[in-house]
Image (cartoon, rainbow, N blue to C red):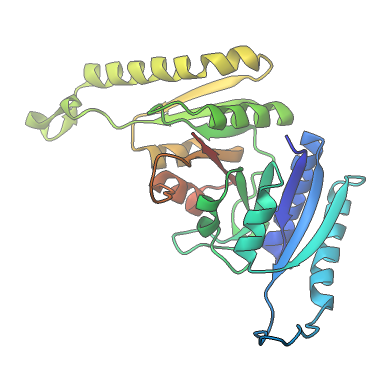
Length: 289
């Protein structure tokens, strides 16, 4: 653990919301907060010609505004700040290597949602080996900071130690229940096509029971380690993405996993896409084996 939470800021309301969220998270983790703004030169530098001074005041103004917002939200929190003259994606990816958590602001809901710092948050996801949290400003979506739990999507297709460790630790820091959500389609043989595609009730119930047993078994080691965390298991017999969004209702944070090994080309996955575009609360994307 590096005991550092880094947040990217760019002067937008979404970035300020992210800074306040990151400050609260740093307080819960008893960690330092690092405010970072990145900016690219206004003009290309020709070989042999030094950089011109380019509006040196506005990065400082962005950081001062973010620091003021943080100090108002979390007085006394250890905070440091810095600006980097580099493409935002590169600067954020490099800063994330020195942090336990990276936080960004996000804009809007829906499939066209874009993220702060002039770049798409999803473009950054495959480059990170630490969790990334995306936070909306209140006017961009429902505010659920006062939710009653933390939700995590559990796939059960393969071990996900890093994801569950992050989820249980986050719930423990916040002293709220952890809602473990698993979505699974009914098997094809559960449908009675002789009755216009109706579902055979007994078969559906057996599939749900099996899913519940598998989820309970997957969570058992973490229940034993985090005995103070109350766990709510939620099985939804539908596709994982909509199941997870239903499970996020009323949560103060939705946690989703992304496997960062085993693929020649980094992949994000449709569940992560659905979460960051449609979840009604901040979303943490956690890379794991």
